[in-house]
Length: 249
Image (cartoon, rainbow, N blue to C red; front, side, top):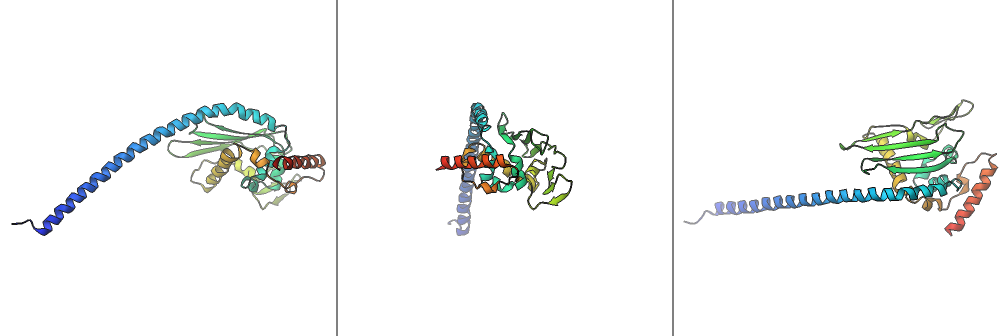
């Protein structure tokens, strides 16, 4: 007697299913092999990053020394940046006139975090000479964010979109000051942390590697809000914009 047609079909299906399972298992093995290679490649990339971070450091330091001699360099670069410029209020721009130096420093093993430091010249707004924001990445996937507490001088504080004037009266401010970015937070799930991450990444990965790109952008000197009695600053800015225009064209 011949094999029942229904049984034969089931046997054939079983053979196909067995082959399919073996193919999937083999594919999984190959994928795991690829993942090991990718992990090894990532480690090698980190080693290269560490090596070249050490090589870049003295060059960045040399660059900062030259930047110090250019009036309002970082103010111009920030306000000319399409994303960062939107974050600076008129009050912030006045404070940024005193920003003499910016530094981005990655951790020694690269993958565990980085810090961004704003070094300010003596100014009428706060006592700090350096404001630092630090991002520390943990193995479990969380991020700890710490920041310098700004020591505002009397009557000059800016926080949560409110500006305290010298006479002690407060006026509402439609825009939130960039300096609220230094508010410390550790909650990775908070939407504000995601914003903090985004701003930091723009500074670290876009502005910091070549700020000259944005410094050379065409800028409108009317965008910089100067005090009426700030004539020296105004003349300096006009000269600066003239130089930028000549270099850019």
